[in-house]
Length: 97
Image 1 (cartoon, one colour):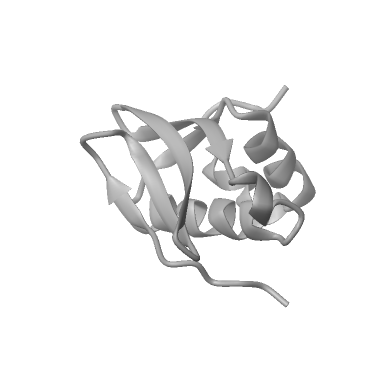
Image 2: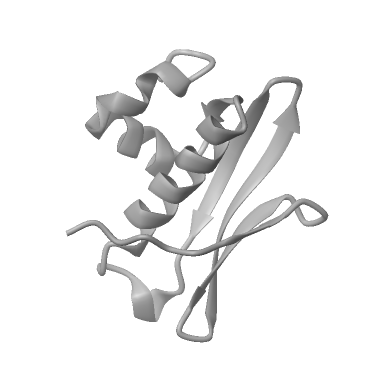
């Protein structure tokens, strides 16, 4: 079962923020023309292993696609997620190594 998580795109801090029962999980990014470089994913330890990381990545990729941008996955967790879910490969600006 896929979870849908609400988030805030905190452009000032350059991160997507997710409220997990009062704890903040984040995906950090940098912007470049036409693309979002995803640099780091953090899920608080007490929430690890529950599928939140994957749900966060999916929500962020959906947001990036909706904005008509491409993604550069510099975070190994996000790169692995895209490798395992090839439906997102068309969103990648540079091939994943």
